[in-house]
Image (cartoon, rainbow, N blue to C red):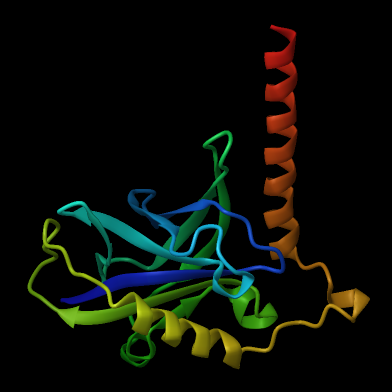
Length: 194
């Protein structure tokens, strides 16, 4: 059996937001929650997410193992910070393909076409079964450089072309941010009334 280990995720958008990300398999089971590797840091380092585990009081980046042959896709959600609601971002095809698994980076279709969206870095290993309780640490500096190289290879649509400024993925992403603002505004109004 081929085991695919999810190491890091890069959320490439025109405007970065601090959020958490949930990864689910195609059956709807949550595989884990990713947190921002560089919260509130420089613009260049925003958007990189890891699975965190605390060992002896220190935070480490770890990978999440999934079956390469059984899983066909992953569903990616962002958690809206104020409400805690999940907003669907995209689906990533991880259908088993030896060449694709060697490459290590998986994206959604929209990311392939637009250069914006989710980049998922993973590596494969061969085990007889997935060992759920074992912790595999991630060299996040190496993972970060691999994701940056891969994302820079893809052509990002120019903001100068008005036809290409808004795409379906960004419309969905910004709609979730608008919902968040509206909910925050409504919560603030209800608190001031009471």
